Every structure is written in structure tokens, then in C-alpha cells.
Length: 52
View 1 (cartoon, one colour):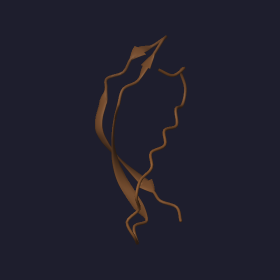
View 2 (cartoon, helix red, strand yellow; view 1 turned 60 degrees about the horizontal axis):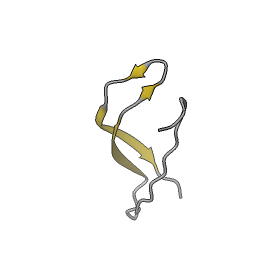
View 3 (cartoon, helix red, strand yellow; view 1 turned 45 degrees about the horizontal axis):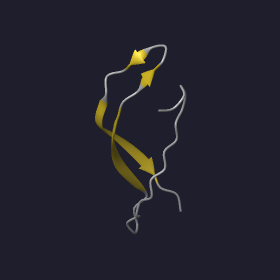
């Protein structure tokens, strides 16, 4: 559990030669001590640009 606010997660990945971005799928839930819990998000596609 984390305090309310932004959380940064890091995960090592392997880059495919020539690819400039990746599409990742996230599943997560969020709760707040003050606002209760949100409906869980499952398999949300997010495009991530890859740097050099």
C-alpha cells in the first residue's frame, strides 16, 4: 500500500531493434482512505514511447 498520490513503477524490458514505442497492458486497482476504492481496471492498453 502507498500513501495517496502518484506512484511510479519501473519494469525492465527488452527492446526490439527498430521499434520506437511499445504497447503495454495494465491491470490495477486504486483505493483511498478518504474516497474508498475505484472499480479495478483490467487490460488497459497504453502506448509508451521508447527513448534511445
